[in-house]
Length: 281
Image (cartoon, rainbow, N blue to C red; front, side, top):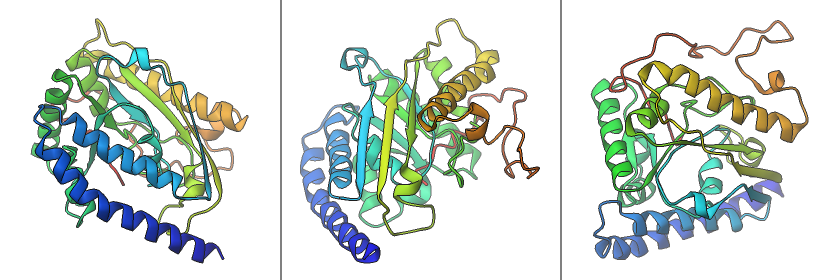
């Protein structure tokens, strides 16, 4: 039964994506602003609608303050599942997503991402990473927020992984606040490497913005850690667990090794070399 329900949901989402392509082509033809805000918002609304087409998901969104969204942010979120993307698309403002380049090469979905003016990054190419930061700065100058998953990839166990520096270096250099998002329940909604949807209660909260006024490159690690801890603590409070239990960097209680490849705090990279590692992965 679960497989049948999931197959029907994917068919509905696939049909929605196919319908979206001509719609977005028309919107883009009349969207002459440098931020491509109308085209982007059309794409996000399509993503948000996809969450409503799936009867297995119950999504709650909190903390949205429309009056606080009159200027751009660097937006960051923890990352549990591909389901994070349509869920976060429910937020009522436009932001350009930084995603791995492979997604932009997909038929239809990649075309839609390019039409929306989202930003691809090749994580193996330093020149690409530097270009991402320049493009993101340009979007911020035109009043459009930029969205990162600073963990770089989805969490395998639902714990909050280490954050990379790129998004926080960008926020300081651009002089805009960081807007943290906390999300939970999406790993159950669509497990990594799985295709079947599960019944899930998904929660998304917008946390208070973190200002960057007066900060310099040397403050990147402190800013990164402050934002990560806010997200981690929010997820822990939802689960009614100690913060360490949802922290992938905390000392494991069972004696297991920490996650392989987890970046540790250390010298701050030059913002032009810092990998955004924000991927729609």
